[in-house]
Image (cartoon, rainbow, N blue to C red; front, side):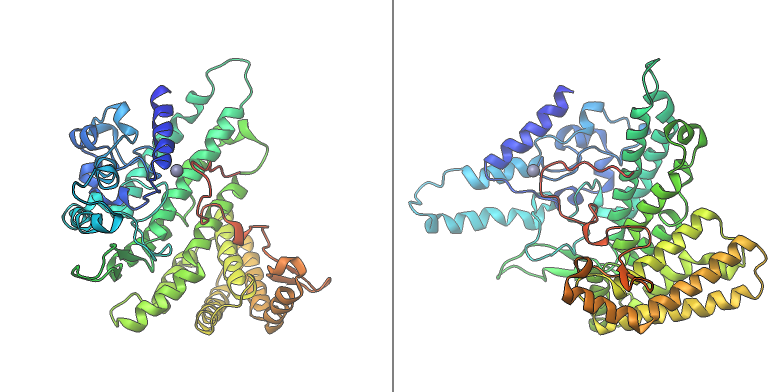
Length: 440
Ligand SMILES: [Zn+2]
């Protein structure tokens, strides 16, 4: 416990010394370094205390990393940045006279990645500049390893939280919610690769560009990873022996909420706009039509297979429709014409796929779900939905956040699940140190 407090206090003291957060730092080590006991003992799993890279969730038991080395420590970036900020420069009597030396020192960032700082103007596009990430040099590999640890913890959850006879099951419930939140966080790191832009801060006189799109293959790999892991039901969280000690019902809502947050990120307007522009500039880029088709076919994979759709997956598919509806008809601002055309086209294609599947589907619950999905698509595509959003945004009704129309009251329902797309804590930049994430 003392080590944990020392870590947080050191981070806060660094703020008083003038240090800003450096969310890029943790991506500047390779996965091999993050898992190397000698490396982390010397350099930490992140080069600085000033990233939010709390604990080394990438490390595996077989790596043999000492427990005390799973926590960030004063790293090479901290020492170097302190030198840059505080070391006296003999002979310089004004700030301007210090500049040539400071700029020369700063060039150490060119050859030593772990001295780099977040890129100005990256505007949330850089998958290497993320909060709560470890090993985000390769988020797919890091999250693959992270999921192994989450599953290990899920296995231990009952024994670890039920040690005191006579105590209530509050700790089980709390840790379960945090574990699901950790799952959501790590999925979010993968999401950021899609439409992502790798960046390095440079100034005039340095070689190379500051911004480069994430390669197409990496974006596709990330999309497939999310379809296979985040949007399939995470069975490690569906354990009756735990759930039935926590609450009478709730696991379907918890998983749906976690998936809704992932989907909100996957279909973020800024992400779609970046994909559109990457595709406009580079013929080889991951085209938005291909990305959206991959997402549709992954979320609705039972259609092509002609298989039964279980209750969890029916929720996942509703989350998809709810999120597309929010992009088209919700939000304070209308989607761009390009995004509108893409998403409406996806819904029309999906409607055709569902209609074709309905010819042969046998399972009654699956059939009712698919018929209901067609009704939802028709509502979302109804031109009145868009006009209603505009009116609501202008008139201030419901705070301008529209969604499905309730025709009886002529009011807009922002989300059929009550999901708050505009204030998703996993997508907002934290405004205080160490935000706490729980999914309820
Ligand atoms: Zn801080």
